[in-house]
Amino acid sequence: MELAVFFAAAVVAVATGVVAVAHRNPVVNVMSLVVTFFCVAVCYALLAAPFLAAAQILVYAGAILVLFLFVVMLLNAPLAESDQPRKLQRIFGLAAAALVGLGGAALAVVAIPGAGEPVAEGTAAAIGRLLVGPHLLAFELVSVLLLAALVGAMVLVKRKA
Amino acid sequence: MSVPTTHFVTLAAVLFAVGAGGVLLRRSGISTLLGIELMLNAVNLTLVAFARQHGDLHGQVFVFFIMAVAAAEVAVGLALLVAIFRHQQSIDVDRLNVLRW
Image (cartoon, rainbow over all chains, first blue to last red; front, side):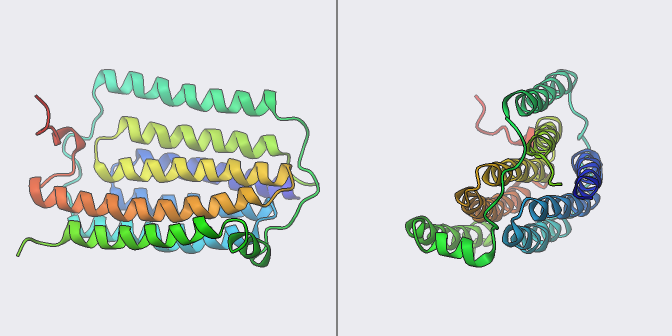
């Protein structure tokens, strides 16, 4: 049963991921990446990480991709007149991407022993205890980072007076 | 029965390759950022898979931090794109060559 869910999610994730990077229309790119991120959230749920599955949907599908969509609409950029890759770029780009994928997959098949162990479930309570325990400093630093990014983004898009 | 770790890591490798292809083959700035997001998600997936394999939640905490950093990165990246578009009327990364000698 879990295997069937995993394979369904994996097939949909890869298919929509390809559409997300290959389609010409940026709105289609973003919407299909939403589906990809939902499938990744399904994988998190299968991996006993319910908190991260929720965070994935809230943060990625909910916030980040809406921001993308907003910018796509805002710029209303002409559908990239020259968005065909050059010949060399196509050859080397495809080769590099294939190398990375094959290398990772080969490592996964060769180097990982056995299946999943019995697990500690990643509930919000368990993650939260780790966040404000051993990772408290990093947690606080992330809040500073987010504030800096927020202010930086506003400064960058501000029109000169 | 639960899904073996290998399956998840293989899926993550494929997703990472797709994202890398997007970054390398497209010339629109938005597509580049989308590819980066896809690669970050693939890495997150491996981290969660290994967190389950080792029965250790610290991997999931890492993923939480990566999500926060990705949010910051995308906010600044998109703001840069908007600023570049205002400046050049284009987000084609090939046309960002004013610093080239």
